[in-house]
Image 1 (cartoon, rainbow, N blue to C red):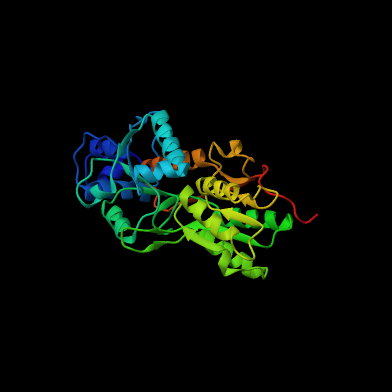
Image 2 (tube, helix red, strand yellow):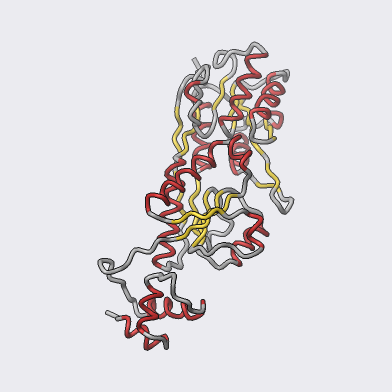
Length: 331
C-alpha cells in the first residue's frame, strides 16, 4: 500500500504538505496545481487514508439558488429542498454560505464546493464551471458528463398520473403547466409537458386546446381552469404541475359551479402540506423533497472528500397519492 512518503517523493513535495492537503487542512497555502498534483499522485498510487486517524474537516458549502425569495414562497418545492439541505449541513457540522447568482461573476467566499438549486442558464453554468469547484445540481443537470445531480423522476411520474386518469375512464385530459425564461432569454423546458404531449398522441387522445402553459402560480391555475371549463368540449380531468396551481383551479371550478370531482377531476404535483386539507383533498404526486436536499449534500461531500472524478446522477422516484379529487367515470 502506498504511503504519504511515496506520494511526496513522486509529487515533489514534503510529506507534511501531502498529509495536510489530503486531510483538507484549510490553513495550508499551496498552489492549485500543487494540490491537484498531490491528489492525482495519490490516486495513481491507489492511496487510501486511514479513516480512524483522519481528522474530520468542517466543509464549507456554497448554496446557489436560481430563483427569488418570492418565487420560493409561491412554490414550496424549492423551499422544502433548501431547508432539507441546510438541515443536513447543520447535522454534519458543515458551514453553509449563501451565494447569490449575481456574485458568480466576481470572487466568492472560500468554499469547498457548491450546491446549485433550481434551473440555470447556459451562461450561468459557465460561470459556475469557471469557479473550478465540485458542484452538485439539484432539480436539473446541464451536463451529465461533468456534474453530479439529484433530480426527480418526472417522466415516470407524469405517465403514472395519466395512466391513473385513463384507468378511471378519462380521455379528455387537460394539462396546466408553467413556462420560465432564463437569464439568457431562453425558455426553460419543463419535461412534463413533453411527456404529456407524447402520451396523449400515443393513445390518440391529443387535443391542442387542452394544453395550457403560463407560470406556476394560483393565478395561472385560476385563469386557465376558467378557460378550459368554458370550452364547448371541456375536459373531464385536469393535470396541473404543482399544487399551487391546483389551488387556483379549485377556486375557478367553484365559481363556475363545477363540483370536484363530480364534474371535473384534478390531479396536482408536489403534495404541499395543505393539499390534504383542500376540499376535496387533492390527489397529487408526492415528491421526496427532503431526500433530494439531503442527497445533494451527501453527494457533494463525497466528491470533495474522495476527489471522485466520475459524475453521479441520483433520480428520486415519486409517489402518486390518491385522495378524493378524481372520479371514476368508467363505471
